[in-house]
Amino acid sequence: MLCDFLGRVIIEPTVVEHQSGQLRSMTQTARAAMEAEGIQDSIVGVEVTGIYHRPVLQAFRGADFDTREVHSFASAHFRQTLHPNAKTDDHDLEAIFQATVNGFGLSILPVKEPYLSLQQYVRCRRTLVKQRAKLQTQIRDKLHRTMPGYTELFENGHFFDNRAAIMIAKAYPSAELIRQQGAKAIQQYLKSHKVRVMAKVVDKVIAWSQQAVAPDDCFTSCSDIWMKYVTLHEVISSQITDAERSIASFLAQTPYILLLSVPGINVISAGEMAGEAGPIEHYASAAALNGRAGLFPSRYQSDEVDRRGGVAWSCNRRLRAACILMAHNLIKCHGYYRGRAELMRSKKVATRDIECRIANRANRMVFQLVGGKQVWRGHGVNRDYLLRKLMLFEQSRQTDVSRIASDLTAAAMHLRGAVAQAEARQLPVAPQRRRGSVQSIGELLVPLLIRLGAIDRESLESATSEA
Picture 1 (cartoon, helix red, strand yellow):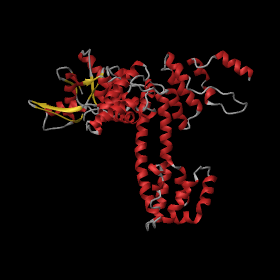
Picture 2 (tube, helix red, strand yellow; picture 1 turned 90 degrees about the vertical axis):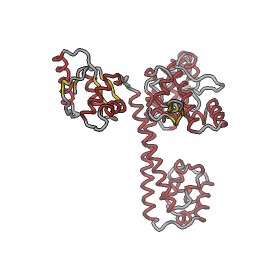
Picture 3 (tube, helix red, strand yellow; picture 1 turned 180 degrees about the horizontal axis):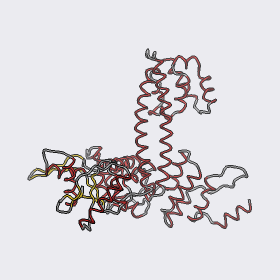
C-alpha cells in the first residue's frame, strides 16, 4: 500500500509473493507511482515479523528507498486505537502507516560480517547444547533402568565427560557381564581402544557390579535405545566442537576479543556477547547497551502509587541472556565482581537481581574495553593474556595449527604497543624443527611474534644459520 503524508491511498493494498520478480515489480511500481504523483521524499515502513519481513526490507533497501522497521508493538498500539474491535490486514497496513508517519519507524543500522556469522554460530551452539542436555537426561533415564546406579559412580556428574565410563557401558551393558569379564579383561579392552583409565576406576565399576540390583524387565529395549542415544550424543558433541571453532575464528576478527583479557570471560561468553550485541559503534553509551538488554527493573507509578516490579520484560531477550551468562562467569571467577556479589548476598538480595546488577555494571566495562580498544586493568585483579587464552581454547578443540595461527594473527590486530609485546611474550617460541617433522604452532607464529616485537628477525636468522 502506498499513501501520501495525509493518508490518501495511491496504491491499494496488494498481495506480493516473496519472489525476486514480484519484489522487483513492487519497487518499480512504487517508484513509478511516486514520479506520477510528484512525490520526492518517501519513507518505507515494514513491520517486523520474525525473519519473514527481511526479503521485503532488502528489496526496498536495494532499490535505494529510505526503509524503516516498525515494531509490532507500535503498529498494534495504533491499530487498537483506530479499530479496537476489529483486526484485518487492511487495518494492520493503516496502523503501520500511522506508526511510520508519527516517528515510530526505526532506522536500524545494518550488521555485517563477521558479526552476522558469529551470531548464527552462537545461536547454533546454544541450540545444540540444549538438545544435548535433554539427550543426556534421556540417556541417564534409560541407563538407570538397565544398569541402576552406574552413572552415580562418576563424581560431580562427569559421566558424559568420561570416555572410559561410556565405553565400558556400551561393551558390557549389564552388571552381570561386568562381573563375568572382571577387571583385567575390561582394562585390556580399554587399552586396545587406546583409552587411558586409572585402575581404581575399574575397581569401582567391579565393586558396583557385585552389589547392583536387578535391571528392569525391559532391559533389552532400553539398552538398545540408550546406545542409539549415545551415538546421537557423540554427533551433537562433535557439532558443538565445530561451532566453537567457528566462534573462536569469527570472534578473533572483532574487538570483542579484548574481553578475553578479563578473568572469567572466555571465548564462548565473549562470542555470545559479540554475536548478540553486534558492533559496539551502534551504541552511544553503556546505558544504551543495558537498555537494549533490559537490565533494569520495571516500574509502575500512578499518583501516589509507585512500585517496582521484576526485570524489564520488553527487551532483546537473547542479548540479556548473553549478559547474564557473562555476569554469572564473572561472579564465579573474577575477584572484584565476586566480592560485589557477596556484599549483595549479605544484604539478602535475590540471586537473579544480583546477576542483573553485575551484568549492568559489567556492560560498562565491556563498552570501555571494546569501544576504547583496551584490555582489562584495575580493581587489584591482574588481567589474563588473551592471545594465550585463545590459543589454549582452540588447542583444546583440536583446531588445526594453521587456523590457530591465523586466528591469533587476526586477534593481534586489535592490540597496541606495550600490550601487544606483553601478549606476544606469552606465546610459544618456534623450536628448531627436524627435517620431515610436522610444523608446530610456534613456527607458524614466527611472523606474528616478529611483528609484535617478541623476537628479533636478525637473532632468529643467526640462530637458524647456526643450527
